[in-house]
Figure 1: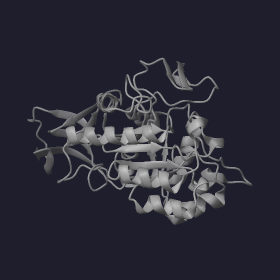
Figure 2: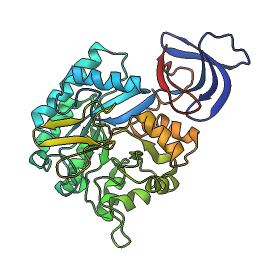
Figure 3: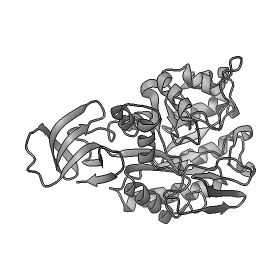
Figure 4: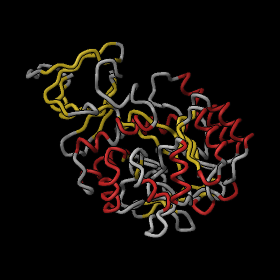
Length: 365
């Protein structure tokens, strides 16, 4: 493959010839020749969406099975994301275990897919900041619940969102010791509580600004603690709905290379206009999903849309916007030795795009 520009995850290279063998990049060399059959304008590592709830048809929490997982993966693939963490939100323990089993089975049947595991968002959240999550299933953690999730989720759950103020220090340590990446979110933590959680080892928050204690000059909250902690990663939904583009710009200036992009899509493609699971409902209007209480219920954008918005509306340089969808989430989840870069030995899985950022495709070799 010949690419006019290659976004490696570290730099931008011009006029590069890439070769691969058995799905792995073997050589990257400069070339002025355009003799290759496949020529692209821009080549990036496969985009990685670490927070996505549904595909074009199905919602993972409502239907925690392999059909939904495949819908999420294939729908993301068609919109430019090569890797995903299907996200299961606050629900009964048996539904969580069902979701874990479905991911495990899907990965066994499709070992070359981009489904890298699961994001468990809840149920151990602060009810004050539950957002659209159902109050009925939001609960404080018990050691037994955590032990069961860790046991069944080993190697499957890549990311878990918790409200750290609802946990004991030992319970947080239990999760950290399991190898699962722990993120603070749906949390009403004070600045001090958040800093304590970060000092214990939590290095990530869930959808910056949304469903977390806001920044105030007397009470800096989780947002303030995140801004004040250079090592903490902050994924953000850049859709102009979940946060104003100006707020995204402020976050970019403060968090620098720790800011990255997620879709948090309830569904992709805006094909599902009404959704209901138990008391969780969502209605699509004017490009946003809201529930009957008026709360946001998930985004409508793809990860590629987020990249375009970051460049177009937040004035983030293209190279950084691409890194926010590739190497940065990979680093945040401890996966940068496997994905997120274009380099020899890495997967020959790419996201290509045109100069106008209108067309994104995933190419696998």
